[in-house]
Structures are given as C-alpha cells and as structure tokens.
Length: 202
Length: 202
View 1 (cartoon, rainbow over the protein chains, first blue to last red):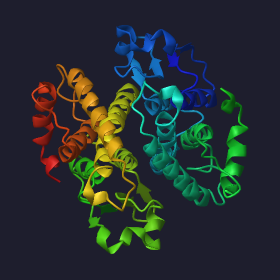
View 2 (view 1 turned 120 degrees about the vertical axis):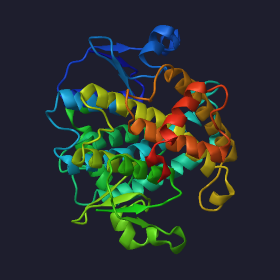
View 3 (view 1 turned 135 degrees about the horizontal axis):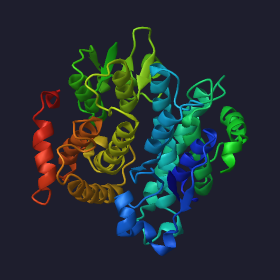
C-alpha cells in the first residue's frame, strides 16, 4: 500500500492520525502541488478530482475520500476499533463523524478557502460566505460543548474517528479565528485528552 | 422503529429510497415545520440539531444524519446489499457516495439555500455563493459523465447508495437550474435506469 499525502491538508491529516492509531506503517508519498503532479493524467487516473489523500493498494486499485480510506483500513485492520463495535455503535460513530465533518470541519475549511490570500486566484472567493461559515462553526462549538458534558470522547466511551475529525477541525479553526475558549470547558478538556495522544503528532 | 421524515428534504428522500430498496416498512412521522415541532425540547432530545430525518429505535435510541441511518439499516437488513459486498466494494461505495454528496448534492442544496426566497430570513443568504455552488455542481456533472462511460451504475455493477445520493442531487438540481442535458448522455441513460425503479417514487 502507498498513501498519497498532502501534509497541510486537514483531510489528509484525518487519515494520518487514523493510520497512526491503528499502528500501521504505510509508505507515504507527499504530493508537491507546486509541480502540478496532482493534475497530471497519471495522478488523475488515481483520483479523477486530483485531490489528496489517495490510498493505492498493491494491485494498483486506488481509494480516495479520507473517510473511505479510513473505512477500508478499519475493515482490514479491525484492531483497535475506531468506528464502533456493533451496528448501533457504528451508526452512532457515523452520525457523530458526519456532524463533526459537516457542521464543523467543512465550514472551517470553507471559511479558509473563501477568505485566505493563499487561495486567491485558485478558487473563486466569496468573503461574505467565509463569515457565514465562521458563524456556523461557532454555533457547532456551542452544541458540541453541551454534548460533551460528562463525556471523555465525542461518539463513544472510547476514542473514535469522530474525535479525529473534530481534532482536525479544531486545528483548522485556528487559521480562521474560530477557537474553543473559556466558554468551552468540556471541549478544552477533550482537546487536552486527544491532542496528548501520540497519534496527534503526525 | 419510527422515521421522523420531511417530505421535501433531499436528505430525507435518500433514506426513504434506501428503505424502499430494502423492502422495509418503517412507520413515518412527517414533521410539520410550521408548528416548530423540530425546535421543541422533545425533538431536540432526538436530534440536537433539530433536523430530519431521524430514526428512532424501539428502545428510544435515535440515529440522525441520513447516511448513518442507512448504514444502520444496511447492517440489520443486509439484503439486498446497497453498500457493497466486501471491504474493497464498501470502500468504493463510500468513496462514490461521498463524491456524489460533497461535490454534487451539497453544492446544489447550498445553491438553493443561498438563492431561493423560501430561505430568506431563515438562513443567511449569500447569492454570490449560490453561483459558485452551481458552477461546482456543473463541474461535477462533467466528471460524472466521463466516469459513467460504459457503466450502468455509479459505484458498482449494481445499484448502490451512491446512486441514491446522486438521484437526490439530480432532483435538487432542477430547483437551481443545474440539469444534465444533451452533453450528458451517460448521465441521462443512468437517470432513466434509476428513476424507473419503484423506489424512486417514495
């Protein structure tokens, strides 16, 4: 297996943390955007969207979309489970992972893409929409705070992929001035717990 | 089991089609937005976000987020499989379902929310962003067209949840003037195939 990686991407980070939590050692190839390799016919064969991460299996089959890569790794390396132990737990993890992705990570990524000079000329920017996204993410931090009341982790009693997605969202939020603060003691405690794991440093 | 449903919602439709394809008969309760029931403490206990659909199990456990509901139903009613038959197929379905959701359905829903008078005063609207979303969805139709070359269905040789998500996206697109046309013969053939299934009429 080989992982086409992009160190700065929050989605690629989700996969790197997942791989580290599984204790796997998958060779990585960092894709250098400046060379345009991800837009070459060779790479578009791997992912028609030209995005990272992509997991390439030994027979050349490729899997893209970070959560699809995690799902595949969960199936072939079930231990430790990061997506729940039975049907209900798995549904619960899926639900929370999607909440963390759709109401926190994606708005924060959009806020960055639509406001940061780095994306000028690359993506069509609508600064007003960046503000809407910041507000959406702030609202999500509010209900996440209440949901974490009395809990160590987001979806289950143990760490799961929903925590990974939320971790990557919190890191993304730093770039767009949306951070948990003194109004979010539960999130701060959770953050201390998850960011202290060895896997957080990949 | 009981399904809290919202007939007009493309996400609720995803679940209804999935349930019909499984041949299940789950009692539905249509949530009437005009009464504000979805913002009552009773409903927020079921889904802290106040959104539909929600699947309530017989012991009161609730699962929200459409794909999480589908995943739970797939596990407890595996036949016919709608998420693939082995680890690779399941990863492939997850990948294509996410592509259809993130690059087609979500931009089309956002285009609607940010431009339609129905949402005025309910959600903060940025009409310029609606246009960005329409363009994004048109770009997705282009690569979906080439991906469907020589294929009957989107992710596998058989119909899967990725087709369901794409179907709901195409229906959503009609409301924001993004439709497959004469430049999309493969999508048109696929559409004739999926929209002719009895499950499409739920």
